[in-house]
Structures are given as C-alpha cells and as structure tokens.
Length: 102
Image (tube, rainbow, N blue to C red; front, top):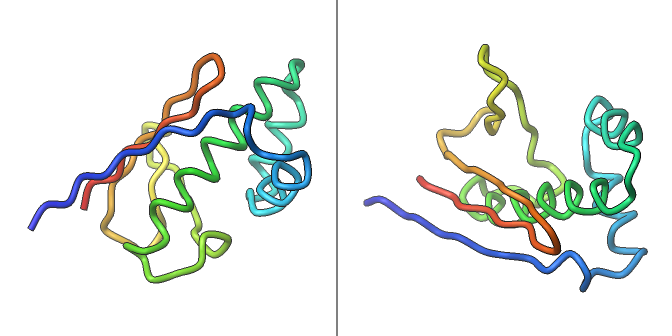
C-alpha cells in the first residue's frame, strides 16, 4: 500500500517557546547553518519545516519526532536515517509544507 500525506504550517502560529524547543531537536550541524542565516524569518521558516517533517515522519518510523535523524545523500538530498520513507519539505513566505510517501 502506498501512503501519501501532506501538511502545511503557518509559521506565524508557533510560540517562541515552541520554536526554541523545535530548534533544540535539530542536529548540531543544521543548528549551525540556521544560526548563520541573516534573517530571523528564514531561520523560523526552516525550523518549522524541520518540525513539520519530524511530526509527519514519526508515526511511520515508530519514533517520537525528536528521535528522527536525517542524513544527506551523495547529491545532498536529505533522507531519514534507518527508514525506508520518503519526504520533501518546502517553505516560502509564511508557510512551511511537507509531503511524506511510504
């Protein structure tokens, strides 16, 4: 069976506490990249996209969102480590979106 799910998050809705908690779940390498972004809204948009991906992937991986680990393939495309599930995120303006296929 093929499962395809998608979700959109308005980045204006999470509280600062939620953004900080979600940021703490990001791996250290990505945290460094996010800290280097000049615009706060770019950082928030990326954190929200990461959170959305983790939240959507967690049930398919039978893990809590904070335990989802991402890797990067040879072409730089991110993937979920240790699981055969596919996803893609996009963010623009006030929105972050994620689609999951497994």
